[in-house]
Image 1: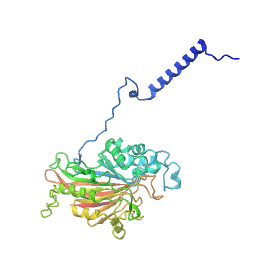
Image 2 (image 1 turned 30 degrees about the horizontal axis):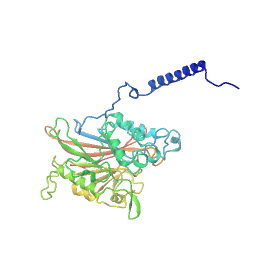
Image 3 (image 1 turned 30 degrees about the vertical axis):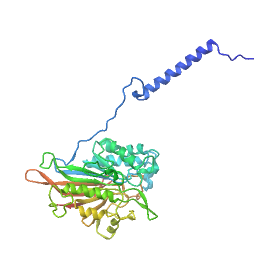
Image 4 (image 1 turned 135 degrees about the vertical axis):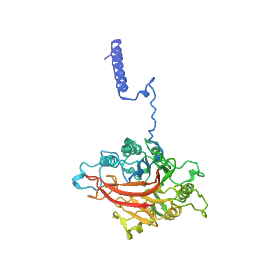
Length: 403
């Protein structure tokens, strides 16, 4: 019979081998893992990076916004492009979206970036947080202030809409909000959706209106999917959101509920506004029969519910233009009851598009009125688009509003 009982010599060899393995593991982990995982290591505290705030016009009297609609970001290099030419497909991925965003930021040098939903394509990623950081990476690297709303695909991965907006609001240089604060509004927790907020843009430095709001940027959550009267449809902006919007507008107009004594519409105390949300309202369909600037190439995919968004915008008077996404191959601007509705056009390469029709982004330029001694209130709002071609071609430049 063979004796398998341990001997002092075997025990010594096993102990030395075990000690060698343990030391090797410790050496490896100290080289490759964060110091705060070890006793005695200083904990790593990461602070959100914040750009120069508040938002304000430049000293030349301009404020430029880059609208990015429908990035549909997946996981990065392994997420393939959709609807591109056969000659482009082999090496096309989410990284093309990233490169386009970096190019357009460098070329246009905007003051602010507005992402209007479907920032990630939830069904194409197992980790929503990782995809968000990759999608918004160029914006964070730029150090520019940026904000986002959600579309109908963002929540289809590992995070719900509240969690997504919470994370987005904590990202570097983001000025996004989950919902408005309690200041000046009763019980904001009852507002439907996540991502309803207002951003003020102040006057040019050193001007008479340097400490005054001269432009408002309204962001609204248009939802994702819903069932209405037994029929599945897209989401819509709810009454509670419109109530909040009216309240904020009236605060700036200084009239609240006093409709009998409206102030002068051209007063700097009533700053014009722009609105940003993802899903178009039903009335946008009417623009097929009207004069537009840009291309109307697909049906308007809106909700079956008409919640009165257009009527609200007309009644509050300050919103001059609305910027939407959702329908990727529509990139037009059209006027409804004095308010412009403009598509951003599909930006991302993993979202559907049209082969041979370049991905694109919209630029919005607001210009102040030049007074005798100082920059005054808002004078003009212009827009154009940039194509992701070799020259970043500039197309469809137009004036949306002129005081």
